Amino acid sequence: MRGDDRARAVSGNAGWNPLSTRRGALGILGLSGLALAGCGSSGSEDLAEQARSGEDKGYVSGSGVITQLTGDDRGEPLDLSFDLLTGESASLADWRPKVVAINLWYAACPPCRVEAPDLNATYEHFGDQVEFLGVNVRDQAATAESFVRSFEVPYPIMIDGDGSMVSLLSGVLPPQATPSTVVLDPSGRAAARVVGAVTRSTLTGLIEDVLAE
Image (cartoon, rainbow, N blue to C red; front, side, top):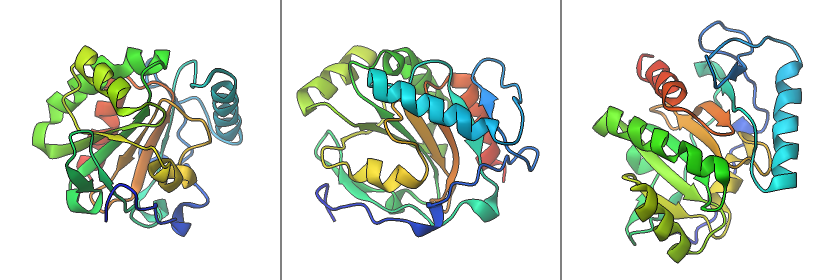
C-alpha cells in the first residue's frame, strides 16, 4: 500500500473510553505539573472546549489535555501505509512491536512551533526504543520541509494530503485537534493522547508508562 491508500476505519476505537492507566479512573492531566484534574464529565467538556478553540483558530490553544487507556479498552490496532517526506514508504504495522508516537502539526501553528524542540528531545531520549511520526495536516511538501530544516526535526514526517491519518485517528482525537499526539502501544493500539501542545516531560512519562507494561 502507498500514501494514496485510505485509512481503514477501526470500529473498536469508535467510542474513546478515557480510563487512566495510572489509577484505573478518568485521567485528565494538565501539561504543567501533571496534576490529576478530576473525574466525571469534566474531561469530555474540556476536550470539547479544546476542539472548539481549534475550530476558531485553526489550532488547539491553551494547555494540553491528556487521556490514557487501559489495555482492555484500547480497541483494535491502527493500520496505515504512507509515504514519508523523504519519498520512502512506511506503515504503522511495520513498526510493531515498537511503541509509536504520532504528532499532528502544520508549519504556521504557533503551539506546534512551541512543542517542536520538546518532541525532538523526547525522540532523541528514547532512540531506537520508540518510533516517532510527524503528520503534517495542512502544508505542501516545500513548507513542511522548511519547518523540518528550521526546527531540525530528526524523525520521519508524512504529508497527510488526503486526510488518511486524520481519518484513522478520528476515533481517538476530536476534530480540528492540532497539535495533538497519540501514543500507540506495541500492538498498535491507542494507549494515550494529548490534545494540544505536549511537553517533553509529559510525553516521556506517557511513553515510559507504555514501555513499562
